Amino acid sequence: MAFMQISFYSKVLNMVTNMSAIIPEKSNGVGISRNEQRETTQWPVLYLLHGGSDDSSKWWRYTSIERYAAERNIAVIMPEAGQSGYVNMKYGPDYFTFISEEVPEMAHHIFHLSQKREETAICGVSMGGNGALKVGLKYPDRFSTIGVFSAGNKIAEKEFTTAQVPQEGIDYRRKRNIWIYGTNDLNSLIGNPEVDVFQMAKDAIDRGGPLPKIFSVLGHEDHNYSGVQLTRNFFESLPGNPFRFEHHEGSGKHEWAFWENWIEEFLDRAF
Image (tube, rainbow, N blue to C red; front, side, top):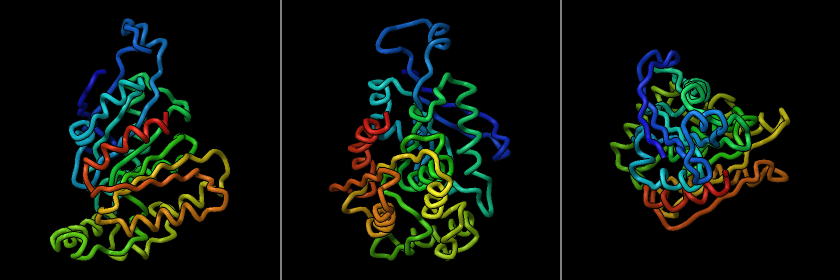
């Protein structure tokens, strides 16, 4: 496998940004020339999103994602999104457009990636899990599988208490909500098709066409355990389970040790 960190100018963000990439160098375990590889192989691709306090390096630094990708011969694209909430921010850049449109365009320009829906998936942890839901549900014709790790529909959840996170964490989230959404009353955004995951899911169903399956995981000791249950209940209540929603729980906190235990399981579902 080849690992790369790419710095490039984003027209959407109007600044230089980064993404990390894991790209196969062999096909089915047999070495081939780079020219032959580029002509004959289009790699299945996973877009892997980081959490709110992380960057594009965190997945490959804290998990064995490169080894798992090598075993399955898939490419992994890990873009950078700061503290954006993966939305077009009220007081900041258009990160949803960047992640959903510019990053795939740039990745396809640089690497020989498959454009088949059944060979394309998106996954994220915490804020990135919420972002994966937004992108995957907005473009269900592009993704076969969505991975949601310790995340849900953020705007439907209640504000954290000091029993869940320290006061400084609450204060920071309030400031971040203003940057991202322009309000601290996130419940007022319910029904907004740009940020409300539940509304996006309903709209995807109404439009018809293929729907991605959703693979959700959550630790029993996660500080947002009760909030994520709202998302679980929503998808499990949809008649006929149109997203083939699959939820798993186990012992663990909001931490990489827990997510490491589930990323390989997700890859087996997605590819």
